[in-house]
Structure formats: structure tokens, C-alpha cells
Length: 274
Image (tube, rainbow, N blue to C red; front, side):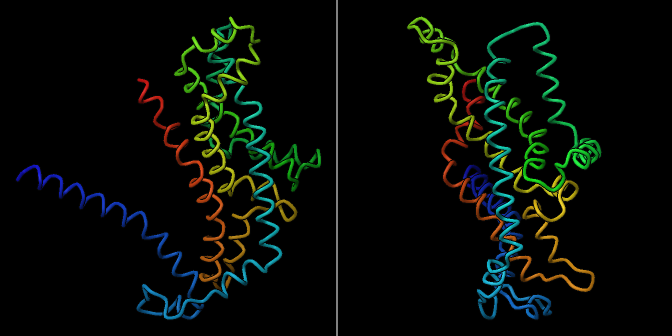
């Protein structure tokens, strides 16, 4: 009886937690289908009186929002590619080779990861205004890389440490170079870690507001800046803001759905090995 009661309380607790976390998403979703007057109606309605798709049509037919969406895709893809191309080999070197200053270099990466983005904003803003990188895709990609590369190194060093060295040594004995062993042995085995690292980088860059607000103005502005446009001095267009938020969330949900198998393995691999 006591075990059944404990199990029942656990399920009730999980249901309460799920409801708490899903409530904002549900409210945003139903608000996106409401009219402007129904959003501010009192008492509020938990189910729209009439599901309106006009909000989504208005958002997707807005060329400014579409441009911001494209900017987010380009900045996110570019910074992710740069982080993986540079961060994966760097993490491998720090994991497999111990040389003078290697630990200091590793802790330097961790320091960059832990510092708040505001530390980099003023120097980057000054440099970008002088060099012409302000309000450009390249400038935004490089700014994001200040965070995404340390994230990649920090995550992948621990993952590489969990991989058995014997597999690489066997490849080296068979005649593979260190580079080929890394490309053909280590990277395929690292797919779960790469997926989880890439997902964290995508979440950071896609949701970033601070870098995009300070380092862009119009040409390279991203989706979070577009969402800010629905908040005016005299009113907040809640129905359009909710619809735009749902549209902006769909790419992340789609990516998480397709990589969830690797993501779960990557996030739990170290615990299983330990």
C-alpha cells in the first residue's frame, strides 16, 4: 500500500510539473489563434472562440519577418559550422595530447563559456563599427562563435575522454594517419556528442537577443529582434506576437525531433560510462 501511494504521488508530481512547464506554451499557442479583442477580453478564454489563421498569414506574408527569419537561419548555420569545424579538432587535441599549457588553454575555453555576453559587446561593437562588420551576417556569425566554439570544446573534450583510445590505436597500427583516424573512427563514434553540442549551439544562437540587438540594426537583424517589433509604445500586438513566437519555435522543435535519439545518448553518455 505504501509503495502504491508513493508511486501515485510521483505520477501526480510529474503531471503537475508537466502542466506548469506546458502552460506558457499552451497559452501562447491559443493566443496565436485569437483576434486582437479576444486577447484582452476579461475573463480570458482558455479556448479561442474562433480559430483564426489570419495571424499566421499576416506574419508569413510580412517580408520583414521573413527576412529576419532568413537572417537567423544564416547566422545560426554559419556559427554552427564554424564552431564544429574549429571546435571538434581543438577538443580532440586537448583530450588526446597533453602538452605544456594544454590545461590552461582548456580552462581559457571554459572561461569564455562562463563569461556573460555583455563582456564582449562593447569591444565587438567598437571593432565592428571600424571594420564594417556592423549589421552583417559575417559579423553576427563571428560574434556568436565567441560563445559557440567554447561550448563545443567544453562539451566534446569530456565526450572524447569517454571514448576508448584503443580504437584509434588500432587504426594507427593499420596504417591510418592521426587525421584519418580522427575523421573515420572518432567522429562517427562521436555522433551523439556532436548532436547534443550542435543542439546547444543552435538553441543559443537562435534565441540570442543581446548580440543581435547591439551588433545589428536592419540588414542582419534576426527573429528575436523581429519579435520586439510587435511591442509598441501604445499597444502590444499579442495575437501577432504569439503567432510569430510559434513560427520562430518550429525550427528548433523540428531539429530536436530529428536528433532526439542522438541528443539523449549524447547527454547521458558520460553518466553511463562513469
